[in-house]
Image (cartoon, rainbow, N blue to C red; front, side, top):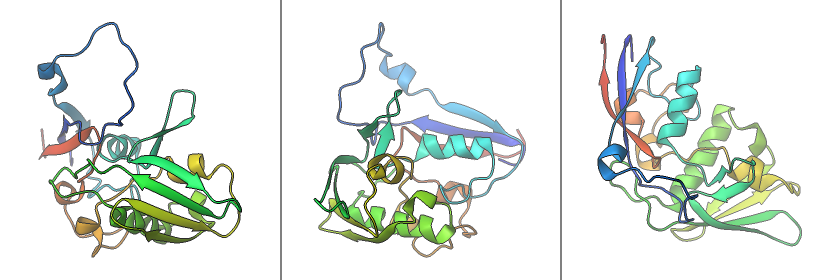
Length: 203
């Protein structure tokens, strides 16, 4: 950033368990390892789902981070970091089961505590309007999260579980939601298809 290049490398760290759609050709391993080089005309700092300010920041967040659910081309929710989500009969309690085979780009394991932290972090930052009805988010073991709502929300799986990216607690727990002191390279650690590999200012 800062009139420079940002390279993000492809990784399959958090690819969904679902089988991919059929394609006419399959990319070989060498092609999959090709870096994505992005030219940025300003320094956005440590971009997170709570503080991106430009379109390129929005894109980079989507490349680096994952949400519990993603959206298919028809906008239906599909599991990403989650494997399943169930709701209680009264519509107030959602139980989300997480994948157990995911690690952050720095090698640390992804757990329920990351989800609890992220939802609270995003609410504190004021960047999560669809989480306004969330009263509590708690971990039930390492790979299950319980979300309690103030009122039933039949679209919560699409509005609350899809679209909000999960942050690594071990990196961001001591940082302010919007004005963290970490560098962009330190802060952008995700579980997504790309990891931040290099920042080259001035090129």
